[in-house]
Length: 286
Image (cartoon, rainbow, N blue to C red; front, side):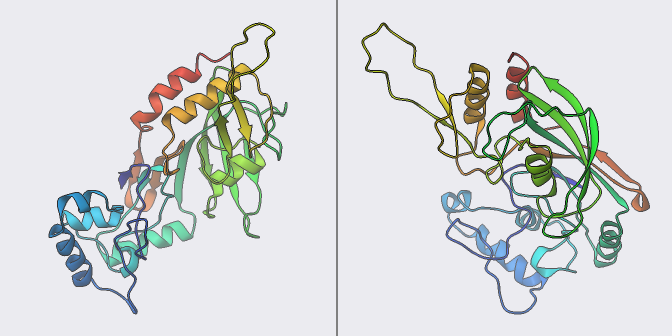
């Protein structure tokens, strides 16, 4: 079990203009082909190599870690988490273990917990603040893509009146499950989520009125609407802008623990250090 940093994909299949370093080939690819890819990259110019979008799979192959070949397009990958999500990822070094681990995931014998940072106040479909309260804990049962999806959440901490730090345990494994459940079911999209949280900060032009001097305020615009929001929300939006990745490649969702009883695996992982300054600032918002 490894801790993946936010911003890194678990694996690549296609080579794209974004700099991904894997090109899909017809048929299955074997370890020799992938190792040749790694050798080719070692021969590349250092500056060019630095700019490549290296996946977790690529990084492990490059340092000589043996990985299962059960899925040649994603060697060793038993499951995956999104690029913007950080934290626990399980990999297999041989095919037999890989198959057993996949069975554990498929039969729901794996316990996965996440930490998510969400707004204190709920938001309606237009991302306007509403007064919907959030229970201390609860179960979310909302289909995703027409398939059942279940998550359990607990409020771990209230950060001032700005945010909640939630612990979320997934009972199913649907694509973007926690992101969708937070955004749609709880009406509290995860901060910095580029798909389900559309908050932006827009600097308003200075007033041309002659009636005294008024300080300009930053306006928090949702989906380009010019809604006037209170000072607290503007402060929070500014905090998010300060830590946002320009490409939207990281957000406040962290795979914090993973338990697989058959393999005596029970690991936990603290949130990334880049969260810390924002968490401290959010506690001061009233």
